[in-house]
Image (cartoon, rainbow, N blue to C red):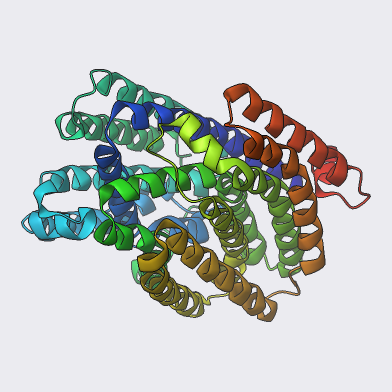
Length: 479
């Protein structure tokens, strides 16, 4: 099983890396091709659609993995039955939001003048929801390699469409509809491919798994969980858009895009870890869960912290280099967002044990508390401190969320967060970031200086961390 988990992680990790790399390349293209206001529209549209995706999916991707990862179930029939739920919710969302486009525009973009973007946001919502539902079917079937290939193809085609559409520097409202249509076509192709690739049920397969009522009862708390998680993650954007406008949101979103690069590590680990934990749970091998959690958290921190430290040390020089001089946030923003990403990654990994133990309502309470804390801190800190205040709010709320989740998980499995090990990794990451921080402080960064500083920092970290006897990096490579 450990070997299968490592292989799945490597495959999905490679696909995620390609997706993030292409998205990273897209950042300088978009920020230079469109105005800050249009880039703010782009990010707010993506954020609004992303917040609604788990709502219209009704938590079913997680439920699909939880109930249909084992053998003996007709996954095709089960998914066809479950698809009725998101289709109905999508129709409901369109029926409510489209007629109220001016009000929705005011809430999302801070101005009712952008109401024409709302139908396109709904189109993007449909495409993203269909893709997530299809990938959940492949995920429960263990087709991680297929998912990785689909992700790479979709990323390349999606971003190629953006590059083609923005070449004449037209206003975003003139070409974003074409981008949504490309997204819809890719989603339809993925759904069709999933229907063809799902393995045919054996002779002993049940008709469609557990009753629909059971599946919906499991997934219902996850809807609120996902909504409050999204609210906690993105409330800063909505506060800033009303306080400072789309241009400020554009700078903050670009900063978040850079600071969120390390989030790829917990995305990869979580995506492949949860099906493995679910199989352990269903097979009655709960003693295997704690070692997997502990190892995953340690590996995540060993990979995430040095990258977050490098970005925090030189983000103020890197972002203008990648975009334009308009994108220059306060120096504290990158360090605070790095703390937020690391803390949220720990939370995401340990969360799975709570969900498998049926503690969805308890997790919901944690997430609701974090969302309320984040909103309150944003309202307190963003008006006087601007972007730095928003970053401080999300860093503190995510740290509290991770600490609460780590404490709660002790009731489920025999695992404790290794604070001393985390501090040790963080100290080595801070030392490794020093060369790049020095280069950024001495003179404006160039591409060559940034690459040299990052390479020196990563090499130094590899020596500092890799030479330890209990090094997570050595263990990861050896296995």
